[in-house]
Image (cartoon, rainbow, N blue to C red; front, top):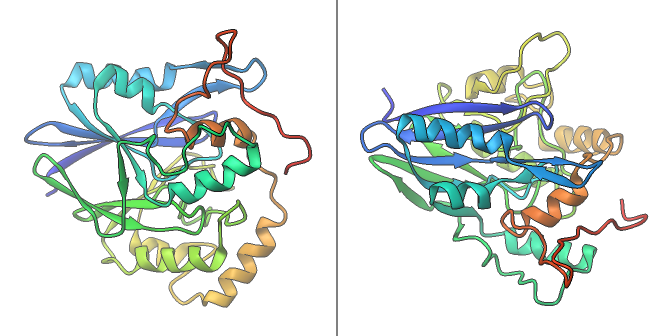
Length: 288
């Protein structure tokens, strides 16, 4: 029996699963990968998705301690600042976010004052770090490949893997974003699949694979090793890299990649307001 409860919140526009983890005894809580709603057509944000989590916490009593990111997402904006303002807590992400920041500061030609040391986040996480959540211990696994800063969160017999793995019938994350690498992704997946077979795996997205009627986000190590359409237990590194590279070359970039990355490398904050009091996101021409 686990020392914590898990509740999932599914956001259908970006197919994102946000998790609320709460220690059963102390009610200390953590949120993983919260979504700030964003309309690309109008350039407006809203907090409907995040407010559902806030309402749940206020109604049920958890005390927010951590606001985790599995990585700097390219498909949705982070609601971390809104959650922190409403509920408190500290933001945390993999320490290699500095590498991601350095890459995208150049790509977007961001203001010179933008720091590439991860200091926008309250805590930077490394392989093997252990965090307390009441009586529950959270172990950090560095699982890069999709991005350099990807981390997974292991709690007892449960791991939250972000975008590294999807449901077995949908496969694995892409590895063609700046700083991504299919070989590195393979090694990260093998690290996850080396956990005991009964370990529960919670994924960061579900895209409703063909033939399945309902969204899902929970599997096990055993299921992934036996059924994942991209990387089974005996799939070789070469086989995976060849398949992943070929598949990535056919994929469109995510609809929200340009606004998402610019916001998420700032820990969810919008760019500094200009002299008219408005924040602006850049739209590079012929970048992707």
